[in-house]
Image 1 (tube, rainbow, N blue to C red):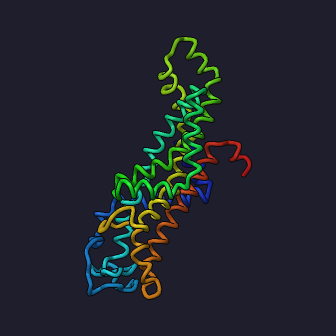
Image 2 (tube, rainbow, N blue to C red):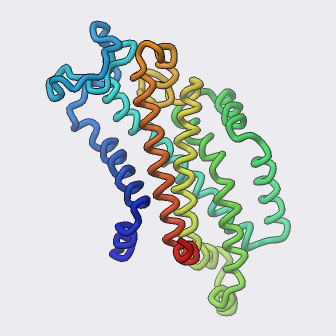
Image 3 (cartoon, rainbow, N blue to C red):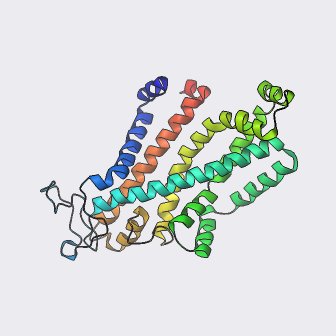
Length: 285
């Protein structure tokens, strides 16, 4: 663990990404304790108030302005990060578990099992993932649970394909052959011996997938198929504020910046993790 953080401190891009991710996570976790206005409370008297730093710490301050209903933009961004990060993390975990297990099964059994699973992956990759998500949500109806399932459905493919390749190489290693020789069962070999050896690439995939899923969540919310009002969502904030972009630019600008910084930080951290766990990439840089 010490070597991990020492290596992180030596990478400016990785450290920047880690710091931004930590800020967003802490803001999401501590949102109820930050003294922010209720994100769903309307105040038509203060509607579309411009950003101001005057009286920043006063009760009625709106440092990032208000939207068309007088709701505080900063509060909605912070509380929206709770919604976005929760949905994205749940989708990454669900997709990672399913994809990793299927990848292990495909790589270990090979033969017909491998061919069937990989053909399913190929077919799904041939479909535009956003179109697939739109079709599923339109059929099941917009809800947080359905959104997590749909995002996980578009995420498990990359885990399955990459983990399968790792398992194909690992299954011929001496420790797997030794486990076979002493009579270890199939599931024992897959869970106890193969799974721990593919967790590192799965972690790197999860980090990179998190950024993609945050964008997909924002896109679906923008189209009205994600988190439903009055709950704050970054994509929904963009959709609601696009009408006022010429008169109240802050309504769409700040949620867009939040999405940009979150995706950028997760990608930077994911790239650093990939380099850290792959010595060949580290030596090339």
